[in-house]
Amino acid sequence: MVRFHHKITNLSHSRFEFIWGIHPGFSVNPNFTIDIPAEDVFIEEPLPNNRLEKRGTIYKWPYAIDKYGNKVDMRKVQPEKAQTSDFHYAIKLTDGWFALTDTFAKEGFGFVFPKDIFKVIWLWLVYGGWRGLYCIAIEPWTGYPAKLDMVVRGDIYSTLESGESLECDPRLDI
Image 1 (cartoon, one colour):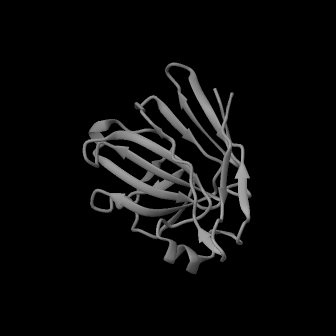
Image 2 (cartoon, rainbow, N blue to C red):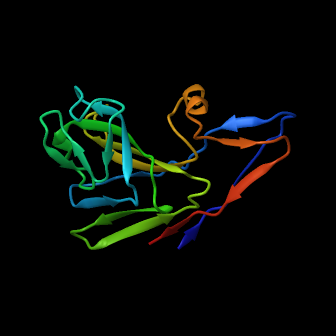
């Protein structure tokens, strides 16, 4: 088990609105599965050519629908030749964790975080379709989307008053 201590403090003299995330990235292969305790997932960017339903569509994890009406199991890591790059937000979490498992090697890990602080998980699933990268990022965040002005309108973000701090101790279970 590896523990991380995170602390953010507002050193200004006024209220501070922000989104904050932890950015773990992972090298993967098609033997990997992604587990997250999510109900609803928001499609931010389905590439290439809107291969999934359009931006803004919400699907029930783990099954997105492609543009032809077929179910796509988002838990399963795709091969690099898939040439896709998807960015989604898991917006309705039932618990504060995610897991990544290599089903062939029978190895994996879980990442545990406080759901009252990190309310969403950002999923960046890059299977060869962005700059030739083959990796994923599963990121606990305090809000969404990525642009703060849009976040504030949607009311899913964090605030700190002057001098106030927010801290937590997420952990990696191997």
